[in-house]
Image (cartoon, rainbow, N blue to C red):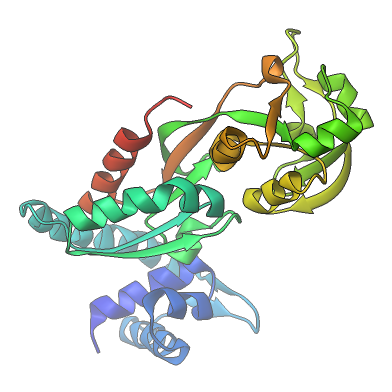
Length: 297
């Protein structure tokens, strides 16, 4: 059995936290992953993983071997990448995760351009508003908007996303147009569930600290387009990135309000797993996205 494949199986089990997730990343059967790790243990004559019914943890010798194995695989990847980089053509699989609305409104067009320029790229795109674990799920890169909570990730700013507060003309005709954020407490709100209420409903009123003004939340959703649709239907006020509602505002289906109390724009970032050599194809995609979006809301 291929010793390198056995080493890769062990490292993947440790990185993903289990045999099932390792099998998914490597695209092989769970039994094959288990067999490869056991073959490695048999060859070395030591137990590398302490197995229980639910978890796996490295033994002392396993920890030592794992740390060296990670460097071995990194060196091999770097050697392979140096050969690939010598060619003008970009090739290989690229796994990318991004928020659903941003992906649909802006990212897919940029990705189409990238793939047309590089026919050798095979793209796997996950559009989902949940926060992907890049290491455990085996992604090369993710696009994230807003505050970056995981300080271990490598990141590059791609651009900015301005926040706007909107409601439909019908809603404002029925309930009145708030002139100050403090008036929002008398209104109905539509809330993006992946952000806390306090962070989502903050406004710059010129004071030292932003003002938090939370309306009565009637609807929560983990997708901005769903909330925009509810706002168009007159169900309440939303506070959302402009890239989601720009066309709706331009078309008169939504009205932008409280414009003088906007918060600073959110950052749009490319993030990468720590401790890995960045493939040339990932670097090239990042460069394209930075050129496409730029640092302007």
